[in-house]
Image (cartoon, rainbow, N blue to C red):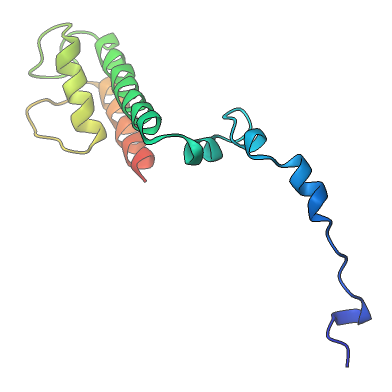
Length: 123
């Protein structure tokens, strides 16, 4: 009785061909595969990237809240970047202390998107 279905042996793969084309330096470049770059990077670079992404996204959302105009977020000083930045951090982390709330259609839309983005990015 034959061990392989249909009476054929599987073809052998020449591993030397693949080893010659897939070197670590070619795979670890971020433009080729970001995931492999993350695996190969140092802890310092990884943590710096995480901090920059976290602060950068919260700043983008803070500027979006500022663009809605004064009074878009209650209990914040008018045109205070630091206040809306803290509100953004609370929203993205789904903390919600209850002191600052969005007022109006656009701020509530931004909060909805930011809450989804915060849940998505943390998973």
